[in-house]
Structure formats: C-alpha cells, structure tokens
Image (cartoon, rainbow, N blue to C red; front, side, top):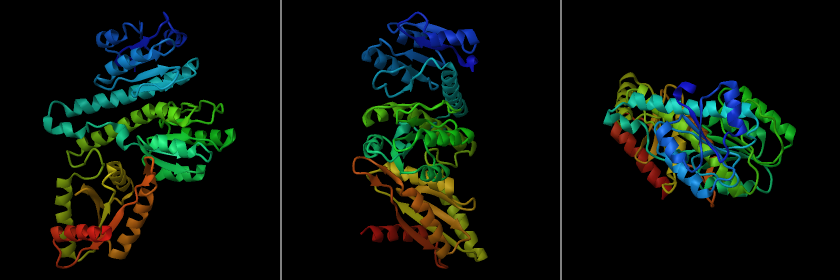
Length: 408
C-alpha cells in the first residue's frame, strides 16, 4: 500500500502519537504538515492519503483542506482524527485514535478504494466515448442506508439520513439480515433498542462475512463495542442530525466504491452495461429484446415483460429499483432503464409466472424511503405477455400504455 504514495499528517503538533506509531511499525511513509501549510503540502507531496488531527483546527481550515483534497485524482481519502462536531462532507471521521490497529485497518480500506479508482481511470484512458462509464454525480445521491433500531430517536434518524440518501428501516436484527442479503447496502446505522450483547453478536456476523466486512457500520447507542474485524466501524453518538452528518461521509465513500465497481464491470462488458444501474444499456437491451422476441415466436416459447414505474420526483428510487433487479433477477432474464422506468424481460415465462416474479421484486423495492414525508419506492407494475401478433415495439407499447392506465 505504501507504494501508492506517502501519508500526509496535518496537525498543530510536531508529531501526533498515532503518526509516531506508523513510524515505529514501518507501515507507511509519513510526511508532516501544519494546518497553515496543509493545502500546499497536498499539491506538492501528492499523498495517497491525508490524516488530519482535528484538535485545534478551525472550521475554515478544515473546509479549505477538504476542498483541496476533493479535487484530487484518483480518489484521495481524507480521515478526520477525533473530530469535534460535524466533519466536512468528504472527511471520514475516526475516533479513538490511540487504537492504531483500527486506524491502520481504516487506512488500508480507504487505499483499496483509491486503487480501484486508479484502475478505472487507467482502463478508461483518454477515450472520450468511455468517460460515461464513470458517472459524474455525487455517489450519495443514490446510496442506500440500512437503519436498524426501535428507540425514540429512530424516526428522527430516518429523516436526517433520508434527506440525503435512501433509507431502509428495520426494527429487528432478523429483518436487517434479510435486507442485507437482498439489497446493495452502502452503510448500516445501528440505533437504540438493543443490548450490548445483541449489538456485539450482530457485528460479529458482519465481520465474518466477506460481503459485509468493509461496510460502514455506525453504532449510535453510546455502548462500548469491541473493534471486531470491521475497518469502517465508527461509533457516533449525539443528536440525529450530528449522527447523520458524520455517518454520511463513510456512506458516500462506500457508495463511490460501488459506483467504481459497476463502472469497471461496464468497461469489461464492452459498453453493454449501464454503470449506474448495472443493467443493459438501452441500445444493448433493444437489440437483445428484438432477438428474444424473434426467438420466442419462431420456437413457440413463452416470453413476458414487466415495467416498474416510480415516482418521477424521486430519481433515486428508479436507480435503486434497477439495482435490485440487477441483483435479484434470474440469469436467463435481462433488463434496462428504459423510458424513465425499469423494463425486465422474463425469458421462457408465461404471464402467471411473470406476475409472481414481479411481485417478489416489487416487495423488495418498496422497502426504501427518503425525505421528511418518508415517501416509499413502491413501483407501479405493468406486465405483458408476448402475443402471436406482437413485435418488440408493440409489446413495449402495451407495457407503457398499461402503466399509464394504472396511474390514471
């Protein structure tokens, strides 16, 4: 990891204890900077990671450094050590800096995302046609947070998180486990209502599953919890607005990692996959759809399609639904974001079976909510079966006209 570049430590002290621990272990080359020289050091040193000791730093200094770091390519992680209050939007909070093992694990996890970003940029090269494989949007805009809890703070936390990201609520650990197995989750916020023993058991399960080990996990109850093998475990207490503000940078980083992974898959698929949804691009979908209709008509096999339409005022719901389809649909099926909705084609499937599949997909989609009114991502579903007289265009037209009738 150290070959990527040095770690820049910004502090009002000559050498913070956590930086000295790196020297003793020989883990990372460390370069020191004062807060006054921090932005100049970022430009000159070109670090792989910035550690900012927040003690004594003013808010303008923090914002200036965060702005300088945000403009770097590839991704330059900024970790705020022992923050007091709300951190900048791209600063990852880290408390209990004396636990060097936790800090090293956090650094390694962040540097893996930097390496993934560098890989995507290298694969894209200078081809302007390929630049669309890396969406130029805030990853938090379509992130999904799993909020678990039962206490009185649960509604306020749901609102605070839902103003910036999609939220799935779970009142029990069992319900949370179900969501983790069926959804792409970008962070877990563990609210009140559970004993320390239950929280510890839940975190142990997450740490033992490679799918969830790097997830941001934010316990908020104030109970002391062992580190576990979870690099992005961060205990954040306080008012719901403060919890959300300091949890969202970790969640954004994870959503960015997911965005990069989808972009890499899209590049490897030769441009056939949409890097935002994980489904086929519209051009690839229309080509495959025409071939599937022709094959079904010539061989006499069944073919059905479903259209999932979402609230147009919440574009996050559309992408969330598309990613659910991408994750859960059968390998024989295919789909795309098409005409402001998600179209899924079910090969070798009659109308009755298509209804059952669509119902299961829809039940997963509608768990997401966001905003002060807790609007839910419950789609309007239209299903059509291929008729002998159908063409690809007429089947799509029936799907769209059916959705319009259902909405009226």
